[in-house]
Length: 560
Image 1 (spheres, helix red, strand yellow):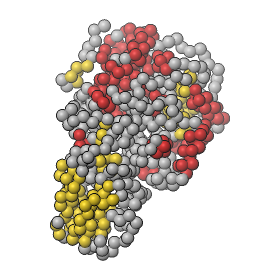
Image 2 (cartoon, helix red, strand yellow; image 1 turned 180 degrees about the horizontal axis):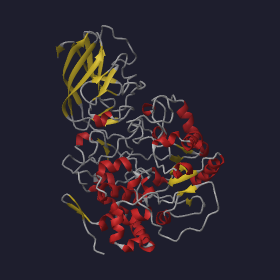
Image 3 (tube, rainbow, N blue to C red; image 1 turned 135 degrees about the vertical axis):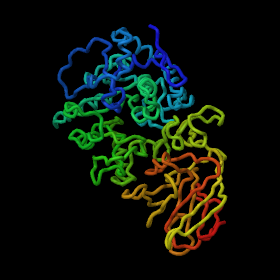
Image 4 (cartoon, rainbow, N blue to C red; image 1 turned 90 degrees about the vertical axis):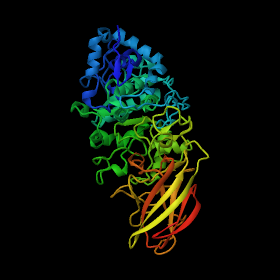
């Protein structure tokens, strides 16, 4: 069949090159992890004969025919009748599984808005061991599984029959690794006894499927990278590829026509999972951040809550990851010590990161041009190389996800301190920043960064009404540090109790709820800080690794 090229701006991408529609039709919408609106999902087409009837069990398996197909998918099937044939769809799926690297090359090409991924962030040499139950898989540039990784011990659920990763994809089956599958069947039986029968919405998803799903959203549906990234993980960055992760709802929720929405957390099934999943070795990796709760509720999400800065995702009360009884017990003990119900409460990802030697609370997403100033990349090439974000607006990380060390430095050029009223001072500090300097949260979204009342770096609120939290020093991060010298300053341990990052803007400020690394924009920039003080003099310095660098004193209402 002659393929009709898809035209986006000046670029053409043939359907053959993208190979999107065949696999999307063969795999179905649940491969999206359910994050797409129902009207945009695609009905799955079985690629083999239906499996033999199973005896009743404590599980309801998703049939995938949950919504109407997209117009693009319908057009693709209509244009090529062979694609509706099970044998043809199976051949397409096998071809895709064997040509992953060619398929994902499309992500290095610009979408309609000029967004794309660096080649280094697509064709990386990922070193994460997917077989390890404590593997760190997140939105960060280095936190990705290899394209070649697929579990070797998958079982179909609920039959618990062995199945290969390829056959799981081709048949559109629900599959998990052996221990996770057995644990799930046991848990589902318990759910049935408690009258909250489970419904598996999505389970194992291969790298190639994730390529197709994300590519379909970014290119074929015309949504572009920025919208696609809010509803689908980049290939290699989905925990579903581990084979230990699933999206689990209940039969009752499904019968009401409900999908993957945050209010599932307050349903009987959501409450059951929150209370009992860990008893079976499963953890909810994307819990409800205390900043995002509606009032005092432990399950309701306030309007406009947005993304959890620690995980990079919204609250997902249906998303379960199996880590096994031993890791669950260790994690639960660490979480209990972290002040549950406060901003310091540990997530699974934070705990796994610390076990791996990471000190920051989370990863910035991979740079694709959508959130420059708050993204990460493995691409350390020179500025002349093609990159989705300016070099000083991307955090370059190594294979372990840590910021790449450079000899770049920052210096204070001038400091101006003006009294705003009797007990408040605003500083305007001009800083010279070389390319490659790394800073950290918290930062100003716009205008001056404000400390209110008794706030300082050990107890600052990212929004009105939020709980205060401490921002520990991250190794190598440069910040501006301020300390009143006299006149009402309360002495505190460590000194320089007012510290702020050198970045600014809505993108980096979105991560103010936790301690994260950020790229510092290069050049001369002004950092404005408003703080409560009746002091006549202030000491100002750059702060790195717990020490002030080149401190200077300034008199309020004077420039130096």
